[in-house]
Amino acid sequence: MFTPAAVTAIYKSNRAMLDRVLDLEKALIGRFYGMEEAVRCMMLSAMTGEAMVMIGPPGTAKSRLIRAFCSLIGVLDHDPREQDTATLAGATRKDERYFEYLLTQFTEPSELFGYFDLSKLMDPKDPRLERNVIGQMQRAEVVFLDEVFNASSAILNALLTFMNERKFHDRGVVYPTPLKMLFGATNHAPREEGLGAVYDRFLLRCRMENAPAGHDALSRLLSAAWTETHSHADAGQGHFKDLPGTLQTYRDMIETMTTEGKLVVDPLGKALPQLAAMVAMVRSRELSEMSNRRLVKFSAIVLAEALLRSAQAKAAEAEVLPRDLGVILTYGLDQGDPGALSKMRQELLLA
Picture (cartoon, rainbow, N blue to C red):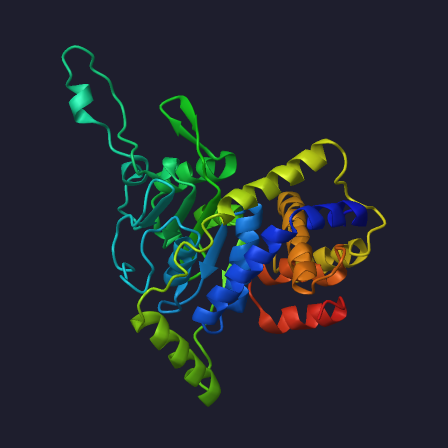
């Protein structure tokens, strides 16, 4: 997909960061049984800055996993094992870098973006209509919106601009935001036509299920979940607090190399024939429209997956291989059909 020389240059320059990401992935997998795919999806989201939504029934630890991740990278001041705030319709944050909210159909935009400061409006000398934005969503680097598709149309319209442009529009004034990661959670994929635009902006979709009713699976689930729920927070809290900065360095390098013409698509790349076949299969089976925008954005996801795979194998060099395209089938489709996906992997030689 990309020229091997450029991919290897990125790989070698960011090897320490990739090892840190893999260490973080290992730490989370050790705490959450059966969530390897969800954790890898979070790592890809963190590396690329693309929005991710977890889709699964209640009780599958979607919120807890996100809070654990945020605690480890130092933007949440407590480990989820110290306090479970899953039922709170409010923000839980260390500082303005993290914002969390549970959305309902009655949530108002001001709850996310700040209420107007009445004291300033009533100031007889200098009356101003100004929001109190301290601690609000447009000031955060990491945002988690629980039950994101329950929001009203007013919230969803505001989210579209926020996610598309990484900017906050307020009464004709445009404010840049420091947003670096956006996570969502929902019990089911949206079915209403009006939610399609927001759903499409969540490039990464991770589907989660309850553990199977087998002896080994339940034993391992109970063991991991009991420890996660009842043990005290360990020294791992904030252990990866340097990671957001190094991830930004990686993203900046991608932008710089692209601008300078050093990171370009290789028309003779090994993965392109399989990519073309995959897009045709996905569209014909109506698993996703696989729009141009999603294909372009998933190029960065495939690159990140290739880099992580190479680092995990401790390879000397890196390149995008056909197997790396599997992330599109795992995290990029509108419909989840395990049987169809397994068959497609075999046909495309991605298994």
